[in-house]
Length: 303
Image (cartoon, rainbow, N blue to C red; front, side, top):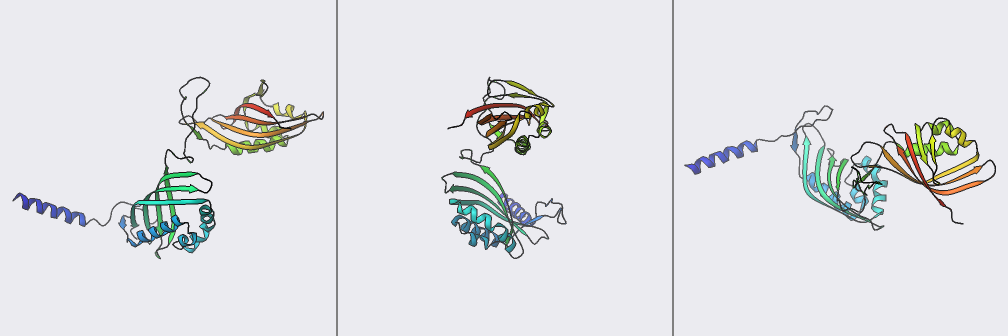
């Protein structure tokens, strides 16, 4: 009797589960909003596997043959350059799921994979990927979206790295550094341009009302309104050229950032004297995105 009851219960359960043909919901802001997802044909999975095989082989034209003409034309130059820089790339999917929004012609091929990249220059990179290949009604890829998680042992490409120590131990000691992206690079490019043009007012716009400049020779200068006007009066010309601009901040802190700038600067004074050195400088940006502190080191040029 118990066996019969169990069999009936299992049959009812399987019958109920077999009736589920739609699940989930599309929440995008278009006419399909609210529509459920359904499973799509495995043919899309096979086409995706073939495109991945071409990708692993570095066969650009074969890979692009699975794309719509428009998408192939838009990505050909990028993919040619990308594969040209690669010694080897290996993408290994571990889960694939073809789904389709009800009443849509497109099929979304969801792919989870592990990928290893080895560049011609010797760099290597590993990552876990979640990708969406979008197929049109003609079974051609017309869209591609990718999300990645980097292997924490990667040689590069990690979102955080290095370590902050501080002059004295503090609550931030030991934290990693991250890139800052609040317009610091653009601000410093603008500063360099205006500085070279001896544009006093333009330079002042990028600084806080009161900023401190610790120079290479131990002086501490207070930069306030009118500072640059007086400073530029002594020069016939200035040429400041940056080698690199690196904006950083301490991980999990407020937006205050420090930007490392390596450069060479040549100042020609009105009396004919010339000052020329290589520089390493740190520009600190406050919460308002203004420079409020600068620290400077110099190196004499080789003869």
